[in-house]
Image (cartoon, rainbow, N blue to C red; front, side, top):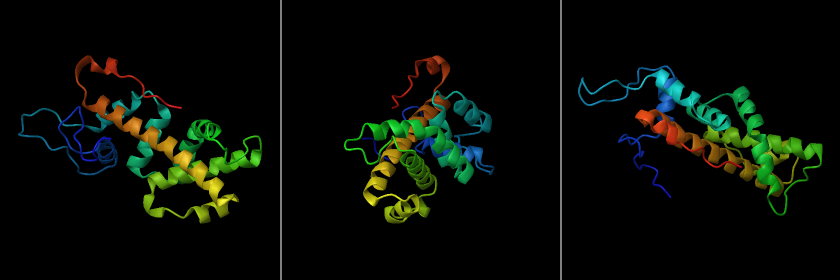
Length: 186
C-alpha cells in the first residue's frame, strides 16, 4: 500500500494529481511553482483538459472531475447513473446478495445507494448514518450498508484509477503515452 504523501512516480511534485486537477480547473490565481524563471512552461488548464480527454475510462474521469471540483447534485446523479452497471456487477458477485435484483424496487434502491455513495465521496462532510439513508431508501440497514459499501468500493476504484492515469497523462513526457494500460475494472 502506497503512503498517502508518497511522491508521484512521474514527477517530484508531492501533491495529489486530483488536487492539481481541481486547482487548475477551478478559476483561481493558482500557479504551479517552478524553480527559476527559465525552468520551462508550467501546467495550464489546456494540459489538464487534454489529460482528462485522453483518459480511457469515462466513468473514472467524470468521477475524478466531480471529486476534484466538488460537483453538485445533477452531475453526481449523472455519474452514479453511469457507474450503476459496475455497482450492479459488484452486488451480483456478493454472497449472500443483500437485495434481489429481479425486483424493480430493489434495482432502484441500488441506484439510490450508488448516488449516496458518490455524494459522500464528493461531500464527505455531509456524511449521514446508514440508518438515516436506509430509512430514506426504504431498506433494511444491513442490506443498505452492503449496497453502499459495494458502490463506494467501485467508485473509489474508479477515482483511484483516474488519479493514476491523470498523473501519468499530465506528467509523462514523450511517446510514453502509448505505454499506458487501462486499469482493470469490473
